[in-house]
Image (cartoon, rainbow, N blue to C red):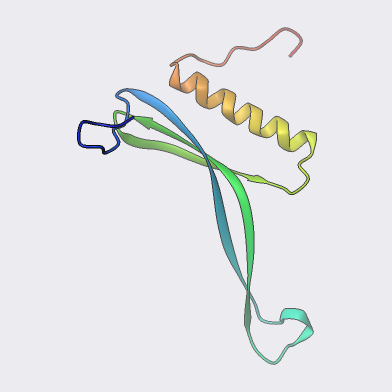
Length: 101
């Protein structure tokens, strides 16, 4: 959404943001790659999806779900459940059990 001056505005009430995010994680190890002469730091990179819940313009919660290069069915199910929960939260509807659960 854009306002009259060309800036962005955020919706009022509850809303959910879903975006792709790249994260780097630093791992400190006192014995990297077999070289035990000193400490070293390794950096790992991960892509993931960030699901953020906002209410009246304020951040309520944020979840980061990692995306693997070759996601499994289990990875897909986790993402689907997180998206479902976010949409139900936005709609102010409690989760409903479906038949067979």
